[in-house]
Length: 330
Image (cartoon, rainbow, N blue to C red; front, side, top):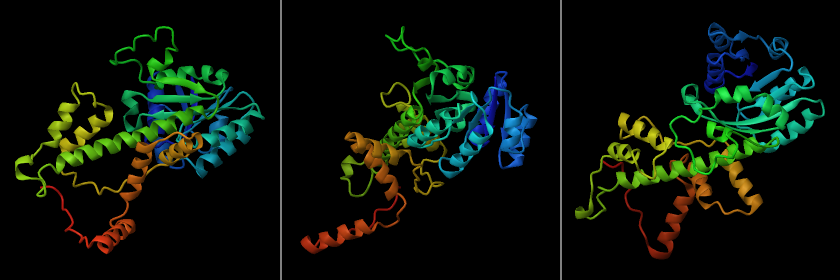
């Protein structure tokens, strides 16, 4: 099957490579001509513009947009909507806000153009592992694109099958689902990323407690000098907290247990905020996910004004003096 790919970053480029490996064809475009040339050398057809990409696609045409959420994706989808024809399809595989998908799908539907939102998880490992995909759009368009999604998905692999799913949609076992109408794919991916924030924060806090088990303010008989790399490794094997995130944690700690190459400054890419907004709209308590998002905000401050004010109040009402700042554990 033929696909046009716009945006050849780490995920967009590897999506094309995985498709080429399975016999699909691709027309590719990026603002950086060097990455276009690199994929052309691997078997893709190079395009010099969006207009050129559309001209090189065969009807019914499919253009996959793999760009950062926001204005650049908005402009690209709008331009494609003016270049494509009825029964063609635009896929947004980035991390767009699901309400934008609903609006875009409505606008494009008036022209007979299909819009499919694909929440895509897999990151830089997707080329080999495959991509978990949560898809929104009309059934007709999603079914037509199934060969693309089937190639990109990780497949059952070595994960044991879940009992009781014999009569359920088999695509979920393969690593992709049709979640619902336009917007549903990115909504599910948004919540996925919100949960990811919470899981990452739980691991981070747990290992921080382990790391400070030998701190001077702990009674000497209860101090433990723990090997964090070994703990992460043993938890990977048979533990109920094992996960891919723990695999990545173990790899990081094996390389440098003190993590001296990292500053601790943690960005958020938007989905965590949108998840909390959805929780507020639905009146669903999301205390862990909210806390994880706020902790990311806190990571960007060397000294928090709020913390200073707390200290000032404690000194004011109780004469509490600030203790020396705790340095890194030895």
